Image (cartoon, rainbow, N blue to C red; front, side, top):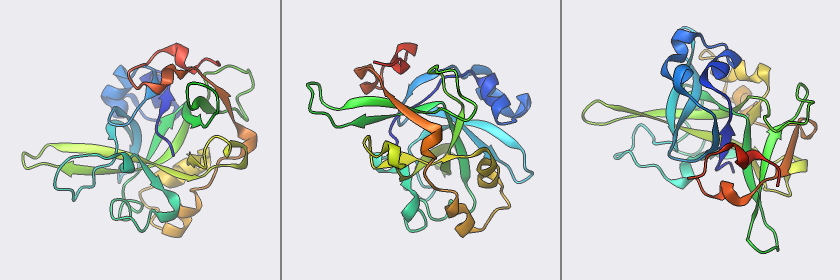
Length: 238
């Protein structure tokens, strides 16, 4: 699964990475500051494309609330959507052909079971290649595949929420967890965002594990266990 991630760049850098104009980056492009420990229920940047092919950066709440829900409540089970059952679950099945988004990240966290005192050991997973060769911890900005929905109350106010799609972990990460978020290649990002793409089988084909040769993990301190902690030291190797 993916229950915590980071996005340690400013809004202007994020907009440039995804080719979002200053106007369409809006408030997110101006105000987003690095997030070192992004948790469910928080408002975070996602990339969406309108019918006219324009990309936008918008804030959405992590934890999907279906548009048909009676109340705007999120649950732990809707922060992720399993790629294998995405077309079967009522909350997700209608979204893949109309409400897809990119969830930007520079890394994500996973907890490995350990017999040492203190319980599970947190690790930070980040893309390390082919353009990342300096050994630093910043990581590349990548796009996790996501779905979103819009819930509207009786007063007309809209609540935008999203979920991150997961798939089976690549062989090199199985020791951490059996699941991982779907990290899209640059080419697949465009296909995933394309509002004209309605071929479900092709879309599902994009939801595969990221190559082991381009991703790596390292131990971090247990400060990341608390979603209340959000500071640069969290991504340092422990």
